[in-house]
Image (cartoon, rainbow, N blue to C red; front, top):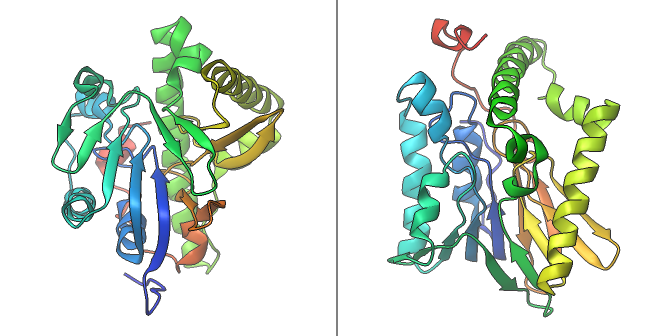
Length: 270
């Protein structure tokens, strides 16, 4: 692995990760392992879709050593004093039945309120309940999932070619989300819906995942935060000691890490 490790670990008060999709072939576990090795924090929030149970049910068990290593890194942080809060998403919704349970230093909550060092109260949830496609029709959600699989497969092939030419990683999906009108409208509607939920909850802001689009911005009086994903963009949100929030784009921090090659099994996605 060709990483740019600091001589000293990066220390944060809090770290938010979501949409890792362990068990899915598109998961960029190698980048996440590098990130987890490079940071220390008091709080680690896992904001849903940490496991991709949907994919494993459709395609069968896929669990390479790198996915196991991600779990070992998270459990290791919990063992050594990091408070880990796991908020299940729609792809790992089975764990929502464990709401309120605590396992060692890991607690499971469907929603959680975190107070930052500068006294902001942030509601943390995955956000799938505000996705109209999933809420209104499971069929539409399934078709969207299949289309996304194809897009990610295309993205992997394209970036394998780009690596050979010495170009950095580039996400087709992120480009489309930022430039295609319908996608921009969907993201806007989602952001407005979760901001409204924060207002109803009487908090200062909200942290979510789900749409794989990392951003921190003000929506009226609500601070909207999305920590992104580890399938396309390799992003995390961090809280500094003074309460300042920041999005880290880890694929920009480290040199390209060799991903597993495209196989015949991957081609079956299309």
